[in-house]
Length: 225
Image (cartoon, rainbow, N blue to C red; front, top):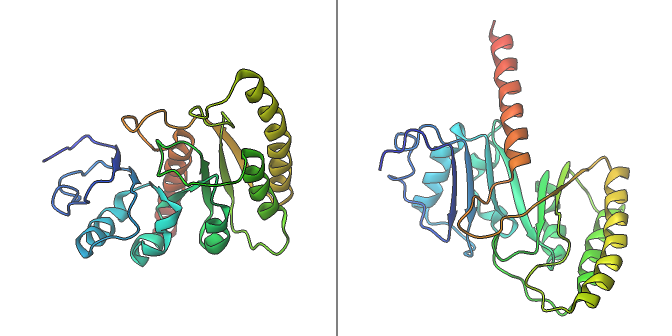
């Protein structure tokens, strides 16, 4: 299927067909998001990603598949990578922190699979704060996206409970933001996708990745002049 004007594409639990997603079929594609509940790629899917990487400005995927991405994708200098980490799973981030420069913390089932946790929302946010405050945590992280709505909309809570939890969570997130500032990590509050039918890409990250790619292209031209 030839889609010459497609610039942004989000796929959810979909096989990455090499023919349908070849540069020849989607020549204008610049921003690609994969919302995949699986943990690995087939050889053909890896071939698809490697083929697309040079033309992409940004790619968004779940943090849990970071170790499965082909090296040719991760090392593509013009490609900006945004990883989605679930609020209830800071341990995963701690294990792969050396490879993450841009992260989006999500709690919505519309971005990725839900992660079950016995911890309260306050405990989950506090765990992220502790990780980012710890001097033992090596952090190449430069950009952190947080949900504008700090409490998942699908939480079964009474109005008075929401107010109490929101107050508590807001104080914890303020500490998280302060920890980020001390480590020169930029924090962006952003509305998260409201359904699987809308793009899973971040508007802010899309804009930044385009600006970065243009700057790289200008630098390359000047270097070759």
